[in-house]
Length: 209
Ligand code: TMP
Image (cartoon, rainbow, N blue to C red; front, side):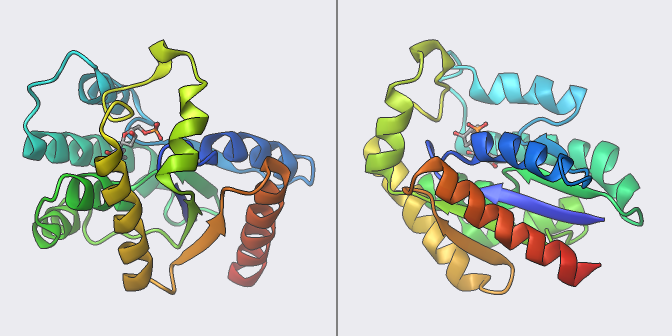
């Protein structure tokens, strides 16, 4: 199995790129399994609803961390760990770097504690490759503003300061994981971003098989 994750701030376009990428690889006979977090399994999608519900304004920051990690554990156990020795290519829209960027750096929680809980919860499981769709909060938030307001969730509604911290957090995470994380400039046009991501993944698949 190859387990690849997509990361990025709000409005980075990673979800739309993922959908197109799946089609592009399928047209070449390469099947990609796509999934997302929080979510990806029935129980994890239920947890997603609780976390992202705009009415849950009383949620404690560590409760939020633990819910993301609980959703991730369930998703891994049901959908990812059983495939470890298969030939599947799984691309997951967000993973543990999101918890570090949003809850660790964004909410200013202890990064070492979050790392320790995640290591314990997933037996040190790490993605083989991560692509960071890098886009400044100014550009990203402008993109999501044009969405239907009903589609925005509890975290979309955070302040610009929070989103700046998340953005800076991602830059720190890249510095700490230069081997695993490839950075793509997601402020570029959709087709350019799609093509760049396609090339990175294509090369990764060919060198890993
Ligand atoms: P999405 O909009 O990419 O589906 O992600 C849902 C929201 O959840 C998004 O605002 C990022 C946030 N998030 C965290 O804060 N921590 C996490 O661990 C994950 C996976 C997502």
